[in-house]
Length: 95
Image 1: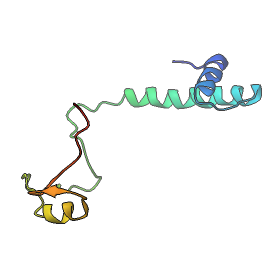
Image 2: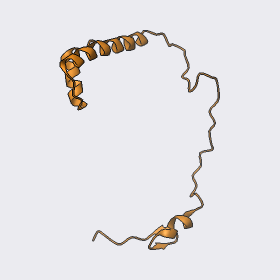
Image 3: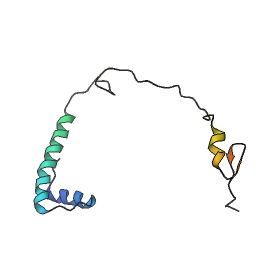
Image 4: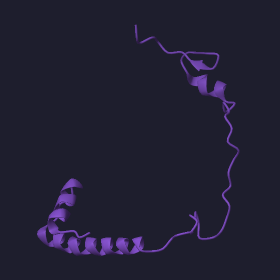
């Protein structure tokens, strides 16, 4: 893929960035170099490579996934103007 000056100007306009003609021509070369590097990454054979979270082998610490009420319902509703059985009471807005 190749980027031309019109594309650079369009992207700059969409990003609301003011660019001069000279800046647009410089960005054209830089963006083409970046896209060339990205295309090189697509040529790398990653068949059989496991995804990594870190360069150092480690296992992820995971907590037990369980549903709780947090055991602080009474603290949560303490500042509410009106509550009943740890639920917020709100005025009726729909008839």
